[in-house]
Structure formats: structure tokens, C-alpha cells
Image (cartoon, rainbow, N blue to C red):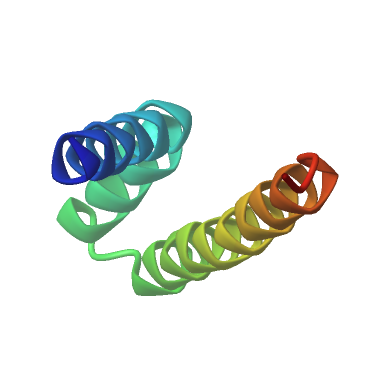
Length: 72
């Protein structure tokens, strides 16, 4: 059961990431086709920062939820 929940959580996370960063990915691909490397690099940096900050916020929320559960 735990592996199923983990797989579902990872799948949801990946799909959410792809959906929320679609515009950035499309801009980056377009910039690469046009050989506009500074724009492509800026898009890559934006995706990395969004991913890192998103993971940190998610971890903080998960820890907060864990801390708020009553201990039995």
C-alpha cells in the first residue's frame, strides 16, 4: 500500500510540474530552434528555480501536516 501511495504521489507531482511549466518549456524549445541561447538559458534557470522552490514548499507543508497530527 505504501508503494502505491508513493507512486501516486510521484506521478501527481510530475504531472503537476509538467502542467505548471508548459509555457516555460515551449518558450525554451522555441528559443533553441531559433538559436536564441540566452533566452533558452533563462527558461532553464526559471524551471530549475521553480522546481527547487516548489519542492522546498511541498516539504515544508508535508512536515507541517506531520507535526500537526495528534500523537497517540
